[in-house]
Length: 320
Ligand SMILES: NC(=O)c1ccc[n+]([C@@H]2O[C@H](COP(=O)([O-])OP(=O)(O)OC[C@H]3O[C@@H](n4cnc5c(N)ncnc54)[C@H](O)[C@@H]3O)[C@@H](O)[C@H]2O)c1
Image 1 (cartoon, rainbow, N blue to C red):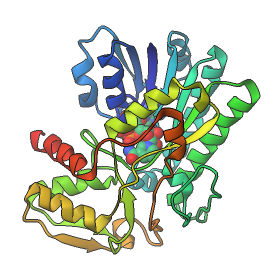
Image 2 (cartoon, helix red, strand yellow):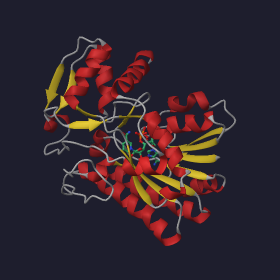
Image 3 (cartoon, rainbow, N blue to C red):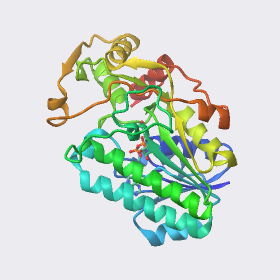
Image 4 (cartoon, rainbow, N blue to C red):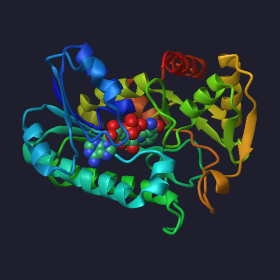
């Protein structure tokens, strides 16, 4: 298989690249390295089946030339991370909305199978758990920048599904829930790498809000394997599929477990949302995926539990 992975030098994209290269596929990555890192893919550069193009998906000519020669497209390029989205709202909207338009127009021209990575953020303030793709969506007001990411991703989903409805472009929309593991950085607001680095440095672990909000953390390798299976599953086309874990943990509980597994002397420090982000910042209390569709389509079930995830992240940061 020849694959184009946009955002392939990022956290999830680099694991997907590795997975495909390991089984003999050809991979071309387009990544502008805005949040991705050359380091993530440096180990693949001697591989004749790998090519990295450092450029933006907004470069229509480049995406056009690259798209012709591949069998499948994984569209991961996106602005990512709460911190970055709040600090760079215009770039966020441009990358997510315009970048996806370019990639889907060309996928349509060349009739390529394509996976769009969306996000559990799209579920917004929904309080019915677990979250299912058929649920109504409740977002906050447009003056709260946090919601622009969900809105932009939602527009991407509408666009992808519109291509499916109009021309039967083989599209799969994947809503990823909190995905974590080696190579993720804490720089843009991701919680686990931040906790791990703080624990290893013996610094306080900064828990935003009261820490009782819960999340389900999925190992990046499980997510990458699911993306790969979904692009090869015709029954998944035209569907919105949740991928994540259903093992729920509070953010305080996560911090505590990181401290224990790192055998760290760190303590937990609570920071109000207003201080961590911006005034009026809204967060969801729970975010649990309904994984039944993924299970039906590809037999999906996460294989790594929270302790394994924390250990693999700790190992990564210890080596760095
Ligand atoms: N990590 C998670 O928990 C999570 C959760 C939900 C959804 N997602 C989605 O998964 C995808 C991958 O996220 P990630 O966690 O690996 O983050 P990441 O930041 O590591 O990956 C995004 C990649 O896209 C690249 N990129 C950004 N703008 C670009 C542009 N204009 N042109 C080309 N490349 C560009 C970045 O440099 C980066 O390598 C994203 O679409 C994200 O929205 C991730």
